[in-house]
Length: 127
Image (cartoon, rainbow, N blue to C red):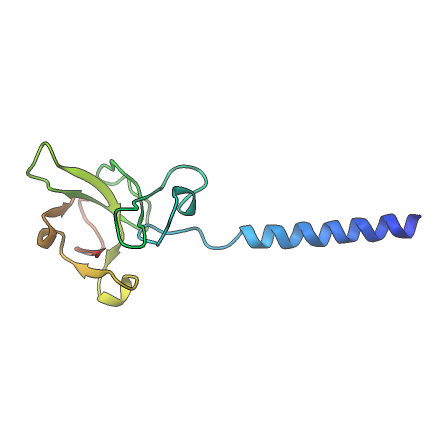
């Protein structure tokens, strides 16, 4: 009886370690592909913009300097009070910084501007 109980405890411990290993992977980054907002964050601090090809992990309604470290705050349609929107987007210095299907572009080429005061890069990953 005792050996059986010990065996069950060991089995449960191994299962728990494997389960934790599966949940400790890399945290999704701004710009990653997604289907649901929970693909981007289980805390609810990042959302999945499903209007972007393959989905795009982002934060809506950002302010300058408030995006996660791996992103920049960009205002789309900055000259329109009706259509202006702000999103955290993935910055890039070269095309290979962006995932497949996305290009490293200047925001001004897409009627947008980076709001952060001193961004590391002046381009972002967009379709």
